[in-house]
Length: 354
Image (cartoon, rainbow, N blue to C red; front, side, top):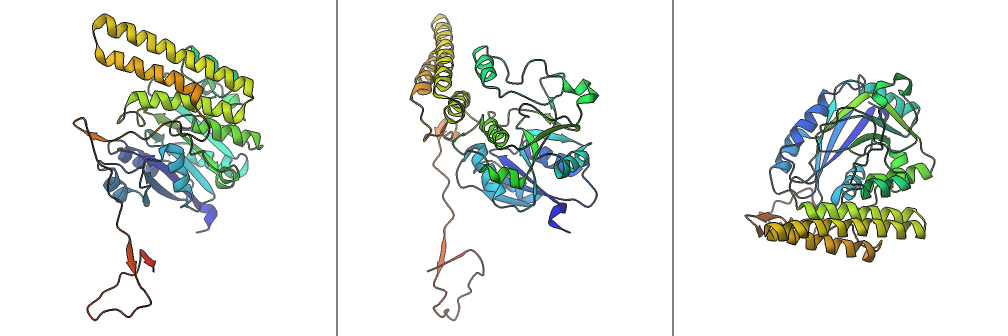
C-alpha cells in the first residue's frame, strides 16, 4: 500500500479513560475510502487513570509525553512520530459520525489544505462549521460572554454551501489537514496550553495562503468536557483568557493587543466583583477564593508575555492531596563495546550507548 493511501489520526488524552474508547470506535466505524489504512496515534499527557492501558489495547501506537504538554504541544509530538501525508487531528471528546468521510478525504486530496466537517454540538440544535476568529469578534464575543461560534452561521440547511470555501475558521475539535500544510507553518504553537491554539494555527495557515473547505457530508458530534472534566476550571478560564491575549500579541497590531488586554482584563474584574459579592452575601469562602483568582487573572492579562505559557499544567490530586510526579522511566545504559559477562542477556532495543 502506498503512503498516499494512509491517514494518520492523532488524538490527545489526559485522564480520558471514559472518552477514548468511544472516540476510537467512531474512527474505526467511519466510512473511509476503500483500501485506506487508518492509523490511530494516541498522545497521552501522562494520565494517571487507565487511559494508557486502553490506548495500548485499541490504538495503533501510543506515546506518553512524560509531562502535560497541553493540547497543541501534544499534537505536535504525535504528528512528528507519524508519516502519512494526510492527518486527522482531534480532541478525544468528539465522535465521528459514520458517513461522508470518504468525500472529505477526497476533497483534501484534490481541492483544499484543510477540510472541516459539520459539527453537531451536544448543546446546540444546528450543526455547522465554527467561524470565530475575526479580530473584532474575538473581543465582542468574550466581553458579551457569548460562545465563540459566530452569530447566524447555519450552513447545514443550505445545500449550495456544500464544499464551500470557508472565509473564517473551522472548529478545532476535529479536522483534516495536509501534513505539508501543517508542517509549513510549524504546527501548533506550544505556548498555548489549552484554547486558542487552533485559532492561532488557522490564522497562520490563512496568512500563508492555504485553503479551507467545508464538507458537511462528514460530521462530528462534539460531546465536550474532555479538557475541563478532570481539572480546576479556574485554570482553564485563565488558559482561555491568556490565550486570547497571546493571539493578539502575536498576530495583531500593538494598539489592538492593548485593547484586547483592556477588554479581557475588565471582564476578569467584572467576574471577580460578581463572585465576591455573592460570596459575601452567602458567606461562601469558596466563591470569595474564586473572586481572588479572577482578580489575579485580570492582572495577568497585563503582565503576560509571549515567552510564557498561557497556563501551567494542573497538579494531580487524590482526596485533595497533591500527588508526587510520576517517576520517569529508568534509562538503560550499557557499554556495547565491552564483552558481555557469561550470564548476561542484553536487550536489543531502548539502549543508550556509553
